Image (cartoon, rainbow, N blue to C red; front, side, top):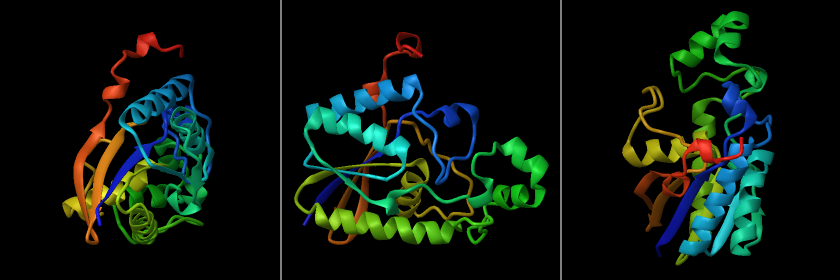
Length: 210
């Protein structure tokens, strides 16, 4: 049976604005991010959605709460929807990593899928976790439409899987905050319908209270 899965990246956070790696650490939504979350909720309420799931990290839950307010859906929270864990690198910017941990910086820059930061996950471990939980949630939503609020890395895993892009290839796709990324799961196979839908965010940044 067919499931329609809408993967939604959380709204902009303060650390997004600073270029800091978040991973399993957290940073609150910025004023823009909170406005983005409200816009996502309004868009999904207008389209109609049957189920709502979220990562347990605060930035995703805050975004999902705005969707829940607009749709009257309960949030199913699953920690497996978290971003990749970057361990000791979390909270740092790329320039800070390059200065303080040059070996780690070089491994990150090489896109080595088996590189595991101290206390963190490798890309291949992360891929296995993400595909497992998305497959499980997709099967549970058979015959319906589910919105899943999660993180950029999670979106990237499914994008690469559907498009056959290895992890050692640099990213060439967008990961927009509060974007809606549309997939279908049918007969065990994923298919992408639309990537990076941000039509609900077309209001200029100057119009938001920042």
